[in-house]
Length: 166
Image (cartoon, rainbow, N blue to C red; front, side, top):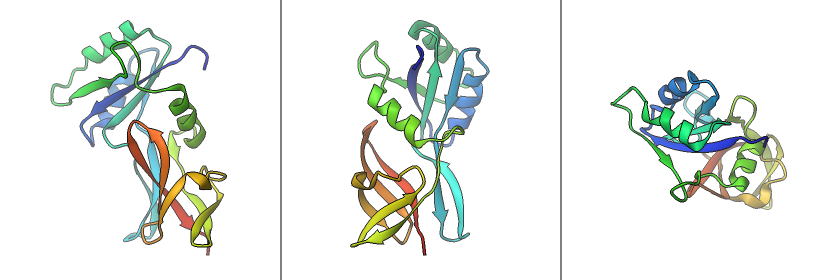
């Protein structure tokens, strides 16, 4: 991953974009809050929302000390940010978690809608980022068009959009 370091920040839900905007003004830092596409029943359209509400991901070639200094200078007192770490010195993302993020998110850091069909009462994904990941789907909510994935990631359950092809 050509010497990139990944960091995870916890902030107030709905303030992710504000935190990203500030961090992206700093040279050597790319901050994003991953989004997911989902089917909105009322509008009958595919919309986007935060994949992990309250989380901001930061990718940088800067050292931990340099990045910590930028985090500490955050100007908005009303917005709480806290860096998640496994240990005192180690970023909260494992290599496996980084691989999963890179595999499922597109260049705009969006987990796009997947499409599939029901086979023996189980969802079989035929198109989209979840293709070939049927074994990770532990539950499918047909009414809301959401699949629950069994992926270990920041101690979070992944609920992602999957629409049946009719």
